[in-house]
Length: 243
Image 1 (spheres, one colour):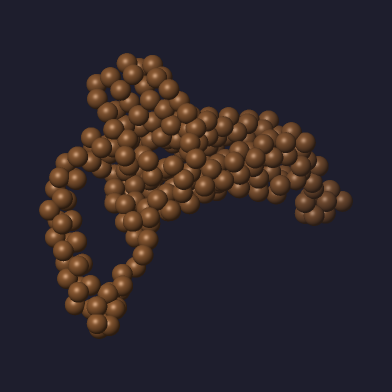
Image 2 (cartoon, rainbow, N blue to C red; image 1 turned 45 degrees about the vertical axis):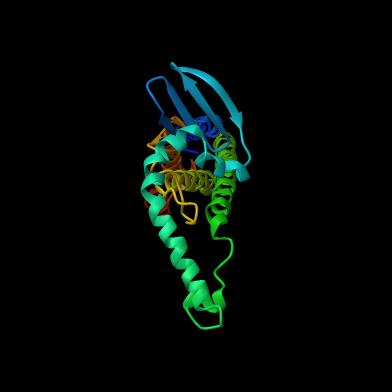
């Protein structure tokens, strides 16, 4: 293989930063006040007080909805909650009126016969769990793909194998970036499937940066891998000229 040191180096670097992105709790971070900061990662959450870690712990994907009820989030959402209080009461009253109006079986969109769609309150919770599982799955796939890319480059496998493993790593880390970005920019609304932490003053953290770097490096490694040629290959034109 013509460029094994470069492909090995790129794949190895991507492997390292992907691993850091997985274990670090700071994909998103929120500076709650002058002394405390709250962190959310793909596998772990944590907090810092006066610049030092006060605690880091893993969480289950079905616990992601609790991020909407932490003290930090309660503080961030306090203004929104107050502004929406009257509007929610009016909406509930309007819904009850529709139920009364269509209780006799009349038509009215999703309120036919006074029945509204069930489970709206769990829409956000269920979607957060699905996105969490997807993020964890693709982060692991990206990590394993980087391991395979390093092994393929060290063993001087075919260029297509080196390129394909790095491309898979790039694709997986890109999906991790997208899922984190969706959580960052989604509306803080428990009835929306695309709910997120847009009102929580969260910023992208170190773990997210690691996935960005891993994506870029793996992409470069994939291009280098696909373009690298087997040593000793001789084109037909050169053979003809030599004769």
